[in-house]
Length: 182
Image (cartoon, rainbow, N blue to C red; front, side, top):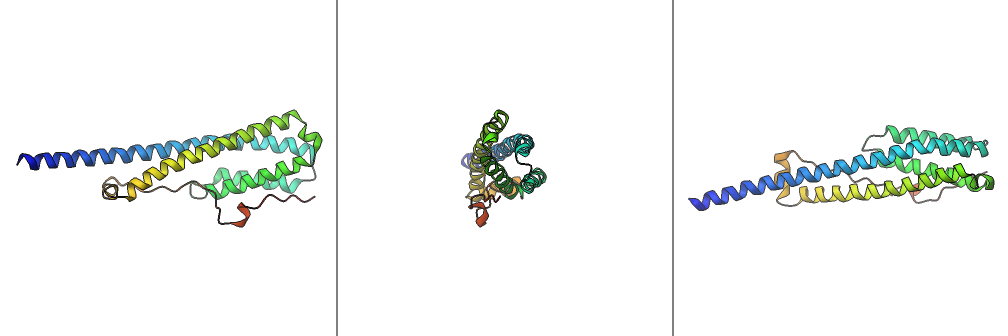
């Protein structure tokens, strides 16, 4: 009889430990998503300043500026499921602004532009790091939920797998360099 109680106690402790592990992994993934949101907000705040600086030098490039503005608005309003595609479009539009800037040597020498470009580049690096951190946490959570015996516990706790944050690499446009025509 004592052996049965010990087995039941071990089983209960195992279920509790596994449940708590999934709670911890889910919270880490949510925290990582919040880190991505912080960096994206920083990017959204920098882009209008960058666009306005470039606009002063290249007033005839209005379509590129409109594209960046529309992509920024779409990315800011995108839900979790559509965030990756919207961010891909925004990154492409920003690369277009940098390509335009290459055509204006006096702009490339402008201290304000250089500062904004450096800030945006730093932000892009932070977004990439935050994305990797998020995807690592999502991987750990999903692996635990999809493997035995975690897949048994996930139903009890109502845990679900999470989606990775990645760019849509299936489209050819995601791999192509930005083309700027004058």
